[in-house]
Length: 66
Image 1 (cartoon, helix red, strand yellow):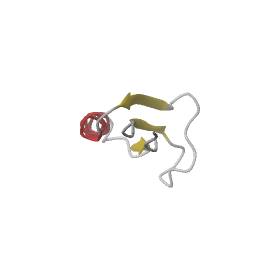
Image 2 (cartoon, helix red, strand yellow; image 1 turned 45 degrees about the horizontal axis):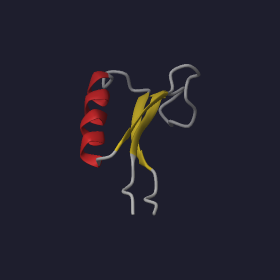
Image 3 (cartoon, helix red, strand yellow; image 1 turned 180 degrees about the vertical axis):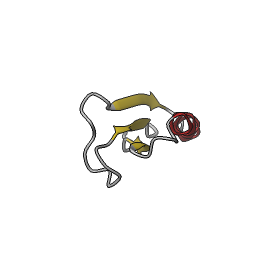
Image 4 (cartoon, one colour; image 1 turned 90 degrees about the vertical axis):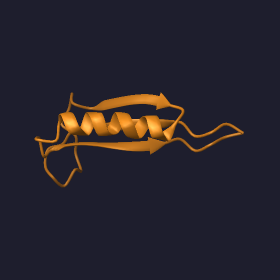
């Protein structure tokens, strides 16, 4: 069985309800085989943009498969 793979997705949103991404700001980074590595990269990306309240990144994972 293969482990899950992890991705970081996000960008700049139109408001702080984070329901709609501003077109052209979308980011998808990955895949990463290890959640710890994804978390480290997520922290770095989030830290870079922390002064901008409309930017958000999330870690998502693919389900493990056989």
